[in-house]
Length: 251
Image (tube, rainbow, N blue to C red; front, side, top):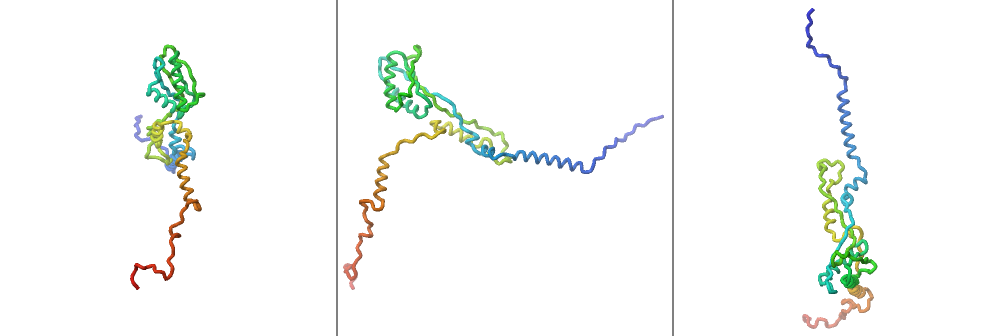
């Protein structure tokens, strides 16, 4: 018996009606759900992302300021430049220090002379003696005075985050790098980092300017002594029939 190979393809299973429509609807639902998930954001998260001072907050770290002054031999006084540096250091200490002022002196007569001069300069600058901690340098460290204190230093935020696609912003919030440059520049330019943490104390008012302004205010007040009457009250009304136009046209 001769067998012939058949070229006929096997019959495919018949697709049920509506299967394609169901798959398309399911895919559309998944896309819609994923889009809704992107749009879900709490008010606190949106406020945080739209506030550069919180999203790119300026940090702070502990730092240390230090000044070394060479002590002249023979009990000589500090030079004018050394005295100016010490006075400036004392002024900065009162403005930005977070603790006591540490003063390390050399051993011997040089240290005693330096302590006397620094005590006078500190008193001139208004530094309280109770805030000064005095110690001695090592014998091999040389004849110099080392003054130091702890202070706050800024830790600026790191900018340059352009990871987000700005063409698609479903949340309608600012992009990650928004406001970062302003925060970083402010942190790097501030003279005293403590000003970013709390306001400083105000200086005394000018009593001379206040006295001048108060004198002007009292002098212009109604019924004040020495106030001159208005000009209109001092003018006299001409009487009827008087020759008020003697130099006028003849009748």
